[in-house]
Amino acid sequence: MKDFDARWQECAGRARKALGRDGTIPFGFADRVVARAHSVKELSQEEVFGQLAFRMLTGAVALLILCMMMEAPHLQGPRPLETGVEDTVAQLVWSL
Image (tube, rainbow, N blue to C red; front, side, top):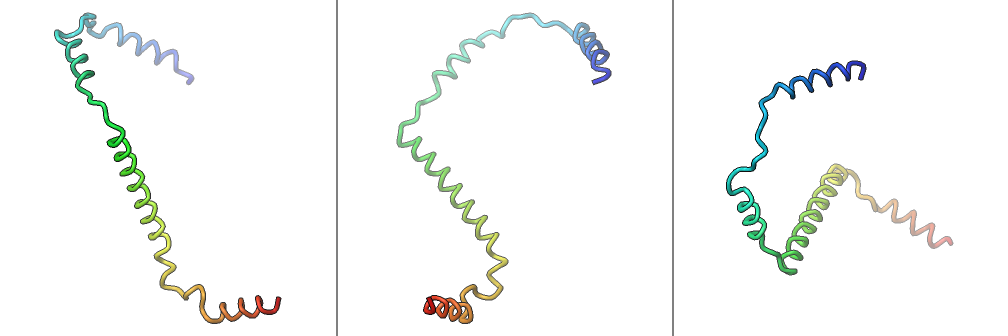
């Protein structure tokens, strides 16, 4: 930020030396713009719903794959409800 003015003046000088362009648009430019604007077809509600449903389904599948990848390392370990844990829980519940 110290040499901002110097750099600004340098860039402004280069811009002044650059070749100038005329302000006219190419022949047929407006026609191409209007033709492209009219060529866009409107989607029906079913098509919009189908696109949204596909995106949501893709996101759900990606989330499911992510959850599976996060859980995969824990599948090789001991089961979470082995008999020792089940007996302890049953004894605590019955003692209440």
